Image (tube, rainbow, N blue to C red; front, top):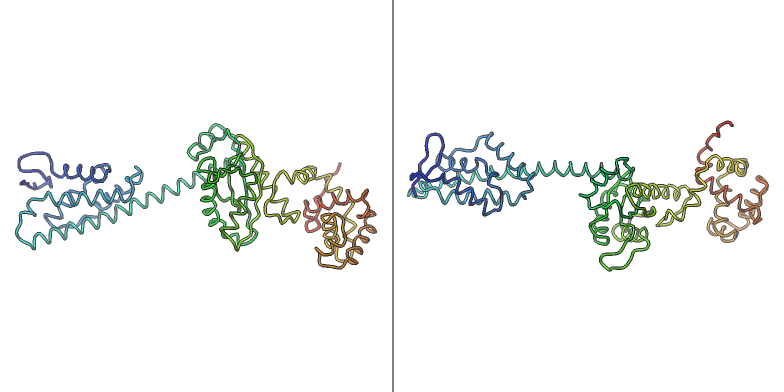
Length: 409
């Protein structure tokens, strides 16, 4: 199988048959199951190295690097691209008659060394180009994913486009969805690690469709189907917030989390609504000093009702509780006593136990409240107004924050 090399680098068989490099390229592509176009001028570079011993030029390596990027963009795996180049090198070596025919061992060794150097250089830049393209594609995908989730949670006005963008993420926006938010009570720097762990947990238990896990504003955001069923056990999950909190506890034993659940709603706007409910639930839990591991939006509806008429709430707090600021130590100790007293069902002994003080101190403080406000916390008829006022104070973050000024009527 004789061959010749013309002055312009054209490698052809002596019988005038098809360019043997093209044949080697096609066979290598078939071996690796990769597009032959990804070889470019690689085989010509290898043949030149075998004949003349020259190293590839910078522009030639740059071309191979671009082919590596092209492979990534076409979805060709890096290992597959490397297999293509190694197979092409092996087939070329088998098809170089002038080298194989030579009985000069030094020439054969020199040709082999030159080919191996080219293979090493080419594969290095090929993989480098492939990895660079993959990193860029991942950044673009992550940016598109982040933008989509932001628009979804905000309730983008362009619903039709939002529905179209949801399809690649496996979301049917016509179905019911629920948003869960997990807030780290400590070590907020671990939120990204928790997101990676919980994405695997959510997919394992809820399936890989109709779910999304991400981070936003220092919170772990989880979108799950409205009707949850554990795909591993087949059992319905009736309290996803408690379920998620338990899984977070298993994978982050030294961290503490509080999980809030919005209610399930259909449609694109339903997701935004559920997200807002979950966010508001976390905020209310902090304001009300709730230390529950799982907070449900439906359980905080009363507080949401109270908070919607801020003017009336400010008026109530000012009228009933502002006199407490005249007490020694300010309003906070008395407010805390009232809050615990109402939470324990108006039992002074239990209030004292929870506040780590004597019953006498509790009764003294309750009497002080009655003297300053004119309302007796022990009187069922007057207790409701005081209780609502205390809840309103927590919602308004009073007395730590000044009450909002009321507009003049």
